[in-house]
Length: 193
Image 1 (cartoon, rainbow, N blue to C red):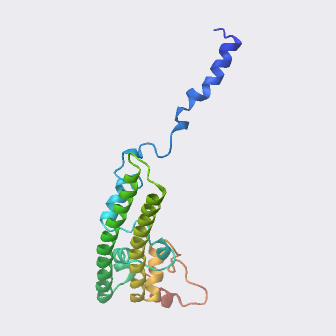
Image 2: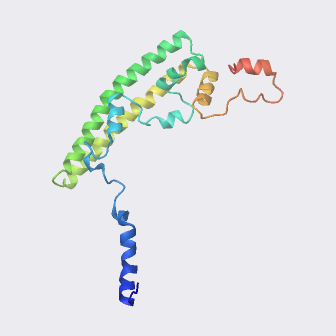
Image 3: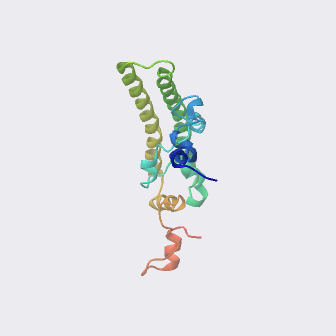
C-alpha cells in the first residue's frame, strides 16, 4: 500500500480523534437522568432511611462513637443492658430526626435542580436556593453529630477505645502487651478474649 504525504498527514491528524472519542465526555455523563441531579439513587435511599450519609465523620474518625455502629458492635464492646437501651433510644431519635431533616434536604435540592430545568434562575433566586439547600444539609449533619455527642458519655473509656479498634481506627491493644505490664491484667483490663 502506497501513501502520499498528504494522505499520511491526514491520517496522522485524524488518529487522536479516532483513538479517543471519549475525551469529550464529562465524568457526569449518564447522570442527566437522575431524579435530582446532585443526588444519586443510593443517596436518596440512604437519606430516606435516616442513614448517616458520611455526615458524622468529624466525630466518628476522632474517637466519638455513633449509636448505630455502636449497637452493631454491642457484644464485642461489652455494652450492658442499660447502656444498650440508652443507645437504642438515641439511635431511634436520631433516625427519626434524620429522616425528617433528610426530607427537607432532598426538597431543597429538588427545588435547586428544578430551577435549572428549562430556565436559568436569576442571581437572587439562585442564592436563596443554594442557601436553603446548605442550611438543610447543615441541619441534617447536626442531627448525626449530636447523636454521637449524646452517645459517648454513656460509655467507659475502654469501650470507646475498643470501638475505635473494632471500626479500624486504632491499633488493637490485645495484639501486644506493653513492656512492664502484667499480661493477664492487661488482657482483662482491655477486654481481650
